[in-house]
Picture 1 (tube, rainbow, N blue to C red):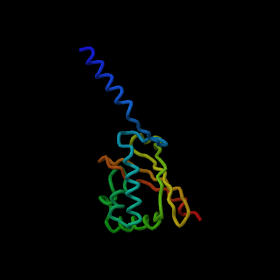
Picture 2 (cartoon, rainbow, N blue to C red):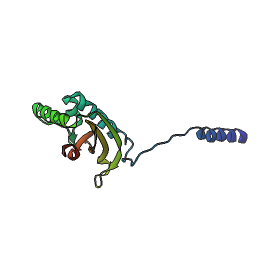
Picture 3 (cartoon, rainbow, N blue to C red):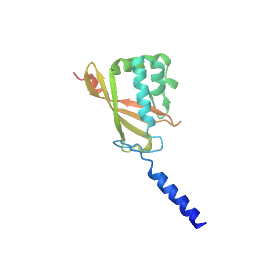
Picture 4 (cartoon, helix red, strand yellow):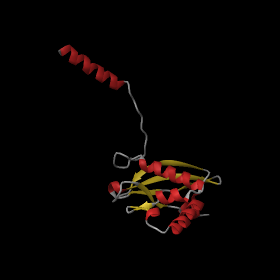
Length: 148
């Protein structure tokens, strides 16, 4: 019995030693689904270049939910078309995420660089977790995009 226990423990310890994983992130957002905000930004930026204003309206919002479910459809379409025109890009890189001080598990900043007409521009996205638990783009710092 004792030998069997030692054998099981040895296999468990040795088996665990064979697996390795390297995770590299600047800062990790709190919560088990910390990667979800980055995926939302990726989907948002894909919708930008596709001029998919419907998807943009479902991904942009506040703690109260997506603007597509709250605002007039024509207004949402106009606002999302304007955002898509401004954020249209040749390429992008998601650099990492940072907590939003004072907002706990509710919000995260996703640091992003857009390449637009050969120029790299820092464009931070702030994402918020809605009351339904969905991550939404709440704010986009377009300051660098609008500077000449």
